[in-house]
Image (cartoon, rainbow, N blue to C red; front, side, top):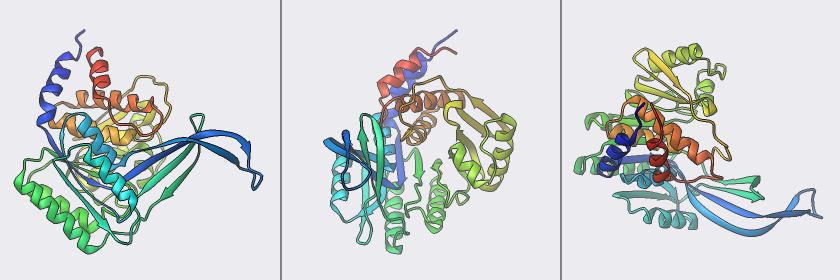
Length: 332
C-alpha cells in the first residue's frame, strides 16, 4: 500500500504558481458570543451577556481566503454596499494580499452580514442584513471590464463563480462572463444556488450539494447510486458541464462525467458546524485540478478539507498543513 506523500510534494511545489479568479457574492460572518443565564423580563427570550465578537470572511470571500491559505494567487471581483461593513470587508481582504481586488460599491445596497449569537457553543439566533436585488447595469459592465482587464493581462488557471443568490450573478452577466472565459479558454468552476441553477453552460465543473440539485430537479434527496446516476445524466444534458461534483454530506462526494459516476465515501468525523464546507470544497477542487490532479486525488483532497472545517465551529479557512498531514498518512 502506498501513501500520498508524492501528491503533497507536488501540491506544495505547484500551488503558488496557480492564479484563480473568483467572482461571486461576498459577505461577512460575524460571531457574537456570550452566556445566556436568565430569561428577559420583557419577553420569554434568553438574555445574552456579551463576552466577545469576531468577524471573518464569508461567501465568495471565504473561497478567496481558502485559496490564499493554499498559497494560490487570487483575483476577486465582487459587489458590496457603501457602508462601514464594506470597509471591514475590504480591511480583511487587504490582509490576504490579492493579485487583483475589484470590490464595487453600490449606493442602495447593504454589504451582506450574517450575525450569529452564540451561548456555550450553541447558536441561539442568526441575524441577516442584506439586499438581494439585482446589481445595476453599470455595475455589470464594471464587472465585465475588470474581468477583461485581468484576462487580457495575466494568465488565469481557473475561475470560480460563487453564487449565493445575493443579486450579483444575473442571467445576463453569467452569459457574458461565460463567453469571455470560453474566448480565453479558462476552466470555469461553479458553486450554484437555486435561482440561476440552469444558466451555467459549457463549464468545466458544476458543484451543487445534494439538497440543491434535488430541489432544482424536483426529485427526492437520495444518495442511492442509481438515483445519483440518473439525476447526473439529466442535469449534464441541460447544462453541458465536463464534470459534475455533488457533495452528499456524511456520505461523501459523487463525481460524474461522460456517462459514468462514482460515490467516494468520506471518513467519519465529529461534525460541529457545516458552515463554509461548500466554499472549502470548491476552493480545493479548483486548486487541485489546476495543478493536474486526477478525479480520485481531487475528491480525496476535498473530502479531507471539507471534513476538517466541519470539525471547527463557525466559518473557518482551510489549514493547509492539516490537509497535507492527513493526505500524507492516507493509504491507497
